[in-house]
Amino acid sequence: MSSGFLISASNPKALLFFVGFLPAFLNLEAAAFSDIFIASIVIAAAFLAALSFYALMAVQISQKFKNEHIMLWLHRIAGIMLSGVGIFVIFS
Image 1 (tube, rainbow, N blue to C red):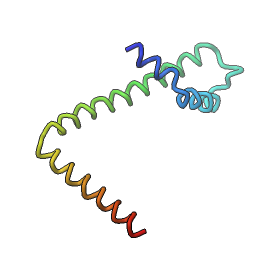
Image 2 (cartoon, one colour):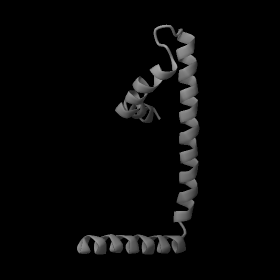
Image 3 (cartoon, rainbow, N blue to C red):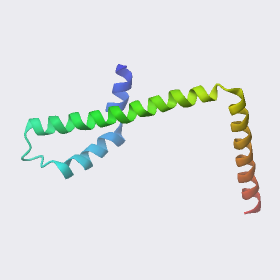
Image 4 (cartoon, one colour):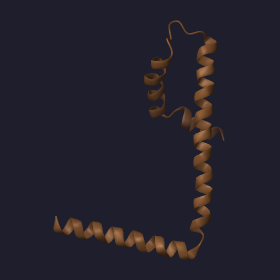
């Protein structure tokens, strides 16, 4: 759990997003600590909700991938798509 937090907290894309995004909504020179704290809590809650949704969808999809019939069709579709890309590359 702590390693996941460290990876997320040190993500340069997320840090750059907040550096660019936060000043648009908060006047950092006039903002009180409570304003920044509330904004941080709201943003953290939104991230938690989004990542929880992704996790729940991943569980649902992983259950579908355990079905061999679905996997057979997934492999067929992937093979057709890759063959189509190969044919496109040959003739372009």
